Each structure stands twice: as C-alpha cells, then as structure tokens.
Length: 159
Image 1 (tube, one colour):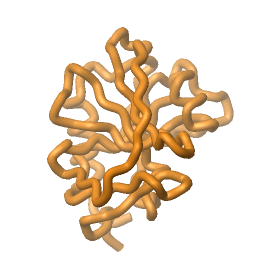
Image 2 (cartoon, rainbow, N blue to C red):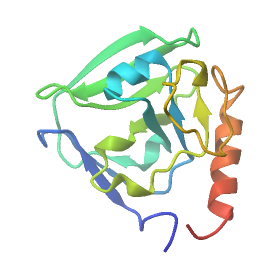
Image 3 (cartoon, rainbow, N blue to C red):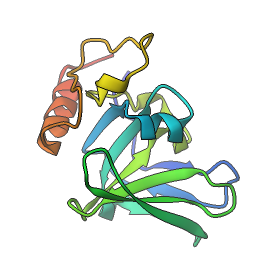
Image 4 (cartoon, rainbow, N blue to C red):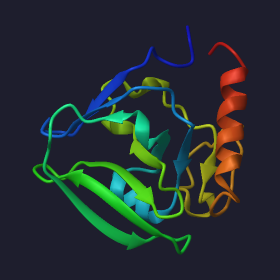
C-alpha cells in the first residue's frame, strides 16, 4: 500500500456547499496540540496539511467566512470556513503566502494524512500517545522541520 493516495483528491465542508480539489502531494502533515486547535477540532488536536496554494482548485464558487486571530506563535492567521455550516476548511499565515494549511478532516478520504510531527505538545491531553514522531513543546522552529520530517516519513517506505 502506498503512503499517499493518487492525486488529485477531494474535500468538502460538512454541508457540501464548499468543496476543493488538491491536485498534488502536500509539503507536510503535522498535528497541532495547541488549545486553539483543540477547540477548532473539538478533539485532542488538529491535523494540518501544508499545501502549495497553486495546487488547490475550487470547482464551484462557495460563500466562505473568514476570521483573523493572533496565534500562540504571535503571528496573524486567517481562517476560512463554509459560510453555511461553519466547517473550518483551511487557514493561512502572512509569513507563508504561497501555502495554505488544510484541515485533514475535510478530506473525503483522510486516512493517508498521518502527522509526521507534533507541535504545541505542552498542551496535549495527557492520554494522547504521541508515538515516535518529532515533538515540540511549542511552535516548530521553522517549516523546514515539518517538510524534512514529512519527506523522511515518505522515504521510509511502506506502511
């Protein structure tokens, strides 16, 4: 079994009004355990998929709601959700305008989106097993850490 699906892959919000196609493999997949992500995911962490903005296709116009907030890192983050059902689809940061971070749960088939790194583990829930992946108590030092860990996971071969 391959670690990645055959691209393109599709995703959508809960009500189906906002959909997207991811045309190519992501740059990285990670789990964020910060309190904001726990709240947004209504779970122990959120799984982010960093993708090139140019690889995202939106087959039909959809009404989106956007909000801005300052993350724990201090950076401004813009979040985008379906205006009808409120499903958070992705977010983007000013410091990385060529990428967006999809929420793995919005993929039609999210099983391949296994995190290669865990960030903000100082706020992880005590019963969450982090496995052997690299872990950071706060923010990762740079996105290169995420990209390198993701490539290493892919290069490790079969699941």
